[in-house]
Image 1 (cartoon, helix red, strand yellow):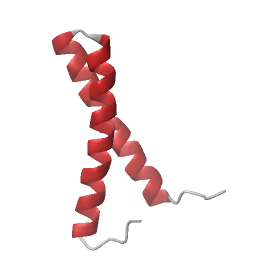
Image 2 (cartoon, rainbow, N blue to C red):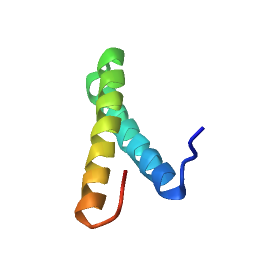
Image 3 (cartoon, rainbow, N blue to C red):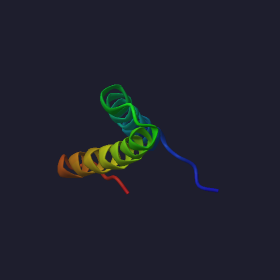
Image 4 (cartoon, rainbow, N blue to C red):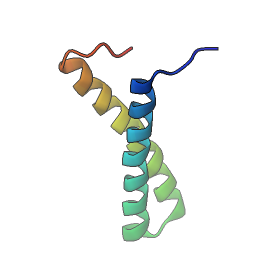
Length: 63
């Protein structure tokens, strides 16, 4: 089983926070459960991709 190092855990946690904020915002403005879940998932994936792209652009080795 592969183990996660500290950097990977921080990336996943931060992307989860971004997704949670997107889901919360969606729920407050639209009040729709399905839109909130979709927004949370999309926000989490988008946050992860943005964080990884920014780290790679800064020269950090992210796999």
